[in-house]
Length: 213
Image (cartoon, rainbow, N blue to C red; front, side, top):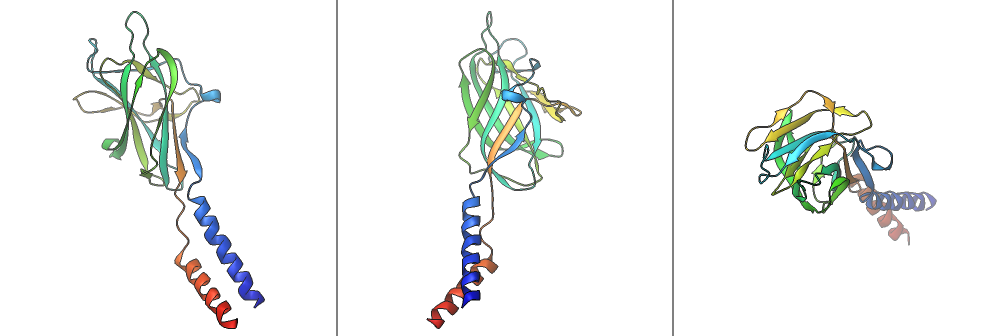
């Protein structure tokens, strides 16, 4: 009887622990400095209505850690041009699969409009339904829309990785490893459900306890 009670207690604890763990928050990737700092330099991002170069986008890679995770937000260190050519306007931030080292299929698009100029950390929340696979590489793409005129700043922590640039509708130009753009990707760890073994153990112990009663 004592063994059955011990096994039952252990099984319940394992099941409860797994259920609670499914919503554990996690930083999937982060190259921001202390206080979310980032570099004062970067590369331009422009919407199609800007009359200089025109529709210019930038992309940066990140790799997920050892556990699957659901995306909850993306934060970028950006700059919006000020007077005389104010660059406020809409942007799209896209999560893309990696296709042989280049940005591939778009998995998620998060949109916002930036109404103030200067350097700023822009955070775009997600609904938590996009699963990012453990060990996989993805791209974050900053896509200027409308009159947006600014830049995606580099990180200031020495993080090196693959980036890419694009002037739509041309293909992406992938660069050799260099300073990556300032980026944080947040999520929640995807902890698996209690295993069939644990569930079977619970059932067997519960049945045995009932019979003894």
